[in-house]
Image 1 (cartoon, helix red, strand yellow):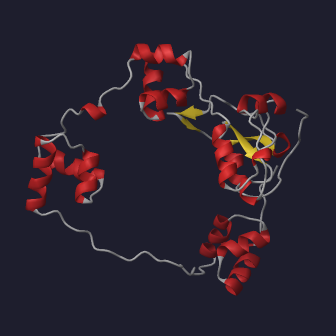
Image 2 (tube, one colour):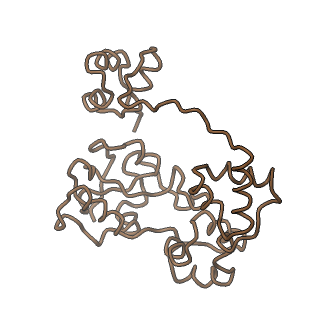
Image 3 (cartoon, one colour):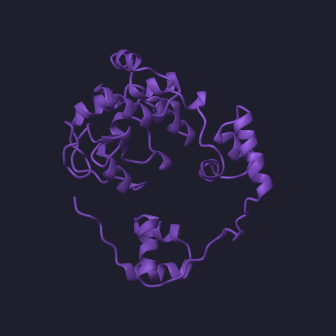
Length: 258
């Protein structure tokens, strides 16, 4: 399916009437980003509702530097704790410690929370996200560790994430089907993206993050617009196609019976 093109002049003229990107996007059935790009192309200034005030960066004096270094080396405080206490970013705190101090210290918080043997054992029993939740580590760290020792992980998600989203948007509990999984959806749609018609690739993952061709679950009628989490309202889609569809209704190539 080709990319939907819009008359940028019409978008700009409609924006000059209402001065709101969201209203223009809903009228033409496009995204807010499409409207903003048209405004930038034709040098039309946007009206910011709540512009951020310009604040001057607060310099770190010698007294604050000494206090940060003393707190870091003589207590069990981590860089994250110092950032919250002194209201600085972690990048600034770590750079200050490397330049003015004696380097970063060994911290038990940053130590490995899972051994290589545990990764090999858990990979055959649990999903990658379940392993992250069990041992309190990030998907990026787990993906790097598993790749280094040659272990293949299962990157799947349960229906609970979608049911929680549906309930948050006010969907009726009777319209939430708990049997929907990405594996069953892939079997029903034959591993074909229902938006562009190309096959999906479940190996398109980098450091625990899904890439453009990774299979995802898409709601034909979005949950934000009253859609239900049922089999007749879900379809298989690439990560990039799902993101490009945004909250628009429909856009499907073909459907297969469950």
